[in-house]
Image 1 (cartoon, rainbow, N blue to C red):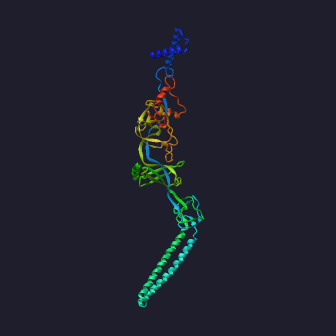
Image 2 (image 1 turned 90 degrees about the horizontal axis):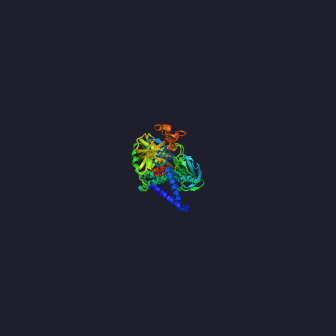
Image 3 (image 1 turned 60 degrees about the horizontal axis):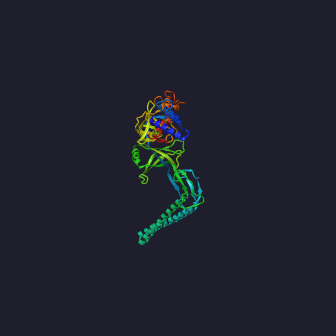
Length: 468
């Protein structure tokens, strides 16, 4: 009351100083009286409620999206980005010098093992083979004559007609001639091998790359590769995992085969599934990771060497895990928390310990037991005890598709009223054309004042997750 009187006096003195024409005592009293009435009227308006009545504003109702807490088996996965690597890569080179006379395939063709790829002019090598064969024939005859002479000399020496020295010389000549014939025989085999090298064949079955040297060019032995062939069936996918995961991977691999799922970017077809087949024998010191390889059959040739893919290595499965939609979890100063809806449609904040995430759902290691209903959208306006107007959460298409590109089963599909507890099936605005707002006892909408809105919002940070 004293503050109001002081305000009236100050306002009256201000008006009198502003308008010097007000000189008389009666006029000043009239000014003071008018100012007092105006201030009292404004103070009376402030004491009225938002709906025109006095008293405390009604409690607001916040529209939210809810989802049930489920218990299901969740695979434990290690995710990374991997690259596709050919199962085998061969650079085809010529083993003899010569001129390429013909090419028997086109760049990018699928070739079979031992298929003819190139031919090199064989005429010089055929001539060498014929020369070596002639030398061999000549030395073979010489060796035969030397062997006959040695036998004759030995017979005459036994009869005493030839000296021992002559007999030994004949035997030595026969052995030398035989050795020369063997050398010529090896030369013939070498020349024949060079002739076979003039026909270049595919060492493995696979996909041929670009041809680097066309017909008519002269090539040198073991020089630039003529073409590169990669084996695509089967095929590798290489990726790295932290060294901290190495012990778990080795432990579970000793029990069973570890499955690897991949997602091919931009593909709508079901993604292939492979098996972990290789763990490197060293840890990369610079990155602290271990190189792994998974083998895929690649029957449809969807995987291509050098391609980047998203991989998910499944090492084990959590049985009967408590899971919630990932957007239900909020981050606070004391850790993760979420809001649950009680049967009376008020909310309660629950601190939780969250685990791994899989297909848009997060495992709750501590804090929930299953069967509760959590708030997935609208948490920014919630505090303990806030009354809510729930609607069913609709699962997006991205969440109904697994990380390996396959659709989830029908039980994990879109949330409907049948998945929600209690009477949410009849009160969910998402399942009805229109839901009327709740009203107070006087028929007015239960909307809080702007002052209460600012106070509730001011305690939280804006963003995808709020803080208490």
